Length: 404
Length: 225
Image (tube, rainbow over all chains, first blue to last red; front, side):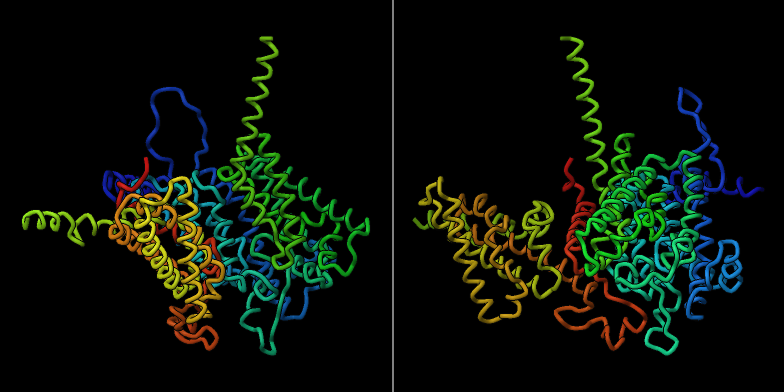
């Protein structure tokens, strides 16, 4: 008997019982469900929620693999006292794709992925059984996003607490997948950030073992580029390195190149809205240009604590930090983002604008994309409301002109 | 004659079922915070520590019970047009008494509670009970109602304060129940860390929300249609 049949029999066996949703979920996760509609007209499509979610996961896999190698690369570079000199991308890969690097990555990153999925899906199954509905697929993407947006050394128990919080408070209380106001992955990250700030910021958390070794003769550290800028230190990475991803940062967000590949997959499969991504980029560039203008006008002097971030060439904001990752994978969340076409333009634009603004004006927390997306998540329904109202008013006016 | 006297007595036993209800209803099924959603601001502001929550609960209980009695005694002579002003004068007097007592005997706590003792004046629960109950009922009933509502308010404050202090600072009433975070004893030896988010106001709101959630899922009749 094939696995599919076995699963199907299990499903039939538990039909109408308490645990039914759990078995249904396993069955439909692995195979196409046997149930099909027989009557009426409906939209036909090969993709359901599960396939959509899996596509997003696949778009993130390059970032995950890069993040695993990068965990080791940053660790060994920090021990050696600095990254090897960067000449060209392909030349540099020989330092990067090594077995040692991968081993560190497998040790540190895979547990994050596993914990994130196990805790999150356990809660999803629990709620499905209690609330007697089918297990929803929403967590599949969140579970992959979470390990990519936390520092590599995040303690696993903290991650589980945060995932539990994010899934229950960020999603289930609103009614589960599709009903959440905030992006669950960012809710989880925001919880971690506010609950355990020492593990989410500073110059110790981005490199494996930096926290353990602090205070010993073997102490190592690794500051993110935004952290260096906020503290007015000299940048020790070039913008090329930042683009390809040879920099410290949260696990999966360092390589803008691979995020661009992910973005291409998502746009090609029409899962992510290119409008949100494009307008987000425009928003960030606009804010960057404004700050550059402020500096070139001489309104702000070199002594100011905002000087370094403000004078950063405006397009660099797209490459450094988590902006690219956030705008590609999280701002485009179809549930918590704006729904109308015009609304998407505004929603994305404001995310870009706020992300760079928070970056510059909040040196205590030099990454703004998380808070910018969460803020605009809250405002997305308002944006949609005004877009819809605007359209109604426009058409009412047309009606008046005709009747007059 | 004796019969009449007995009738009067029977009519009004001090703790009749109805009077008991005045005290116990606001504890759960008509809780001022979780059901009427009043007095939220102080519940968010001062519940980072259990001690402050308890003191706040006691202070509100004193003000509400006394105020209810005073308003109830004056209910026939207060002109309805200026009743809010009269109520404010009564509650302000009582709050100043509480504030001065705290300053005299628990200065540190009074500093911690800071402006929120003074803000008891504007606590919606107090004005709400004056308006809704004390103006239409006798002093004894009003007293019980005041105690009951303040207890319901205090109960939530203490629950929230308990969890916020335990998870946020790892202490209860100032005692390090989870071990010493600096010396790394107890739970901290295992790598546990205090949750700083619990000390911020949003987490108080979420804690109150979770209490409301649990309460309503246990008693479905409380859910609004």
